[in-house]
View 1 (tube, one colour):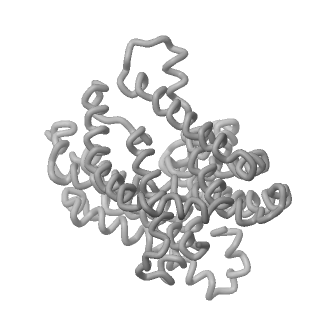
View 2 (tube, one colour):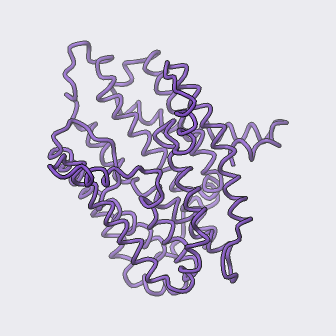
View 3 (cartoon, rainbow, N blue to C red):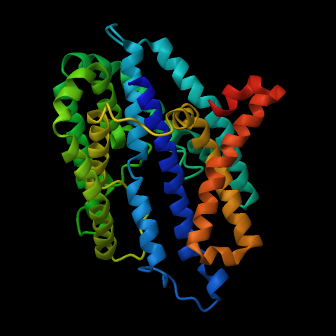
Length: 368
């Protein structure tokens, strides 16, 4: 199962690359459209075009990426615990250290890029940015994972002894968070305190508590889960496939009823059901052969480094195209694949070259 989970991690990092590529695609469609349409371009005139819906479908298909990462991280917490009563704090400390050092390095690079673009913060804002990962929209994941690691010694005993209760609590928390988002997303006339509840940031651990917890529970009860899920495997897979178009329709409904032209993507209720269906299908189809096992598993072992490095790479490539070849921005069928290939390929090339150089002794500090 460990090799299959590394493979799943590899699929997840590809999904992250695709997800963030769609973000740059939407940027080209709506924020940079005047570059190729001219100064008279009407804002959001390219909405509801084939390019827009192609990006939305791709975005929806890869929505399970972060839940998958957290599920795999939780599983390996259970694997590391083994037959012991609990996970040791020294192991948690080592894992957190392996996250923090590369995160600080790449986070500092992201802040430097912001500074070059003219964004200057106060010392307090710089400190807060490292605590919550807001120097880029993607780095919130590292503070989130650190929090989940930090609370795992409190989760593990429950996962071993009362896992059904623990999962019920995690599902309830996830459903509650989704329910609280709707007043904010739809601009409903509700009390301010209810709106604030719906603004729980993505870096705060309750927003993704379910996936990490599910990984730990499955890690301790893998055989039972596989046996219980096997006969429902096609139901899980069919549900996941069905939820791709339904997820697109759900978000379009939310966007239409919000009264806004655009809302930053957030995980919705259907997204969570989609992620759960994908994960349960993966567990249930445990005998299914996986293509390109070695290559994708290798991506899985390097996923943290790829995650950190692809953000600045994509930004440099996208902005470079904006300045050097702006006409490309009008052709999503060309622009987005360039972002995908460079976003995945350049971090892998960097890892390969550093491994061959005298700097390889610093590899762990750079990529984790």
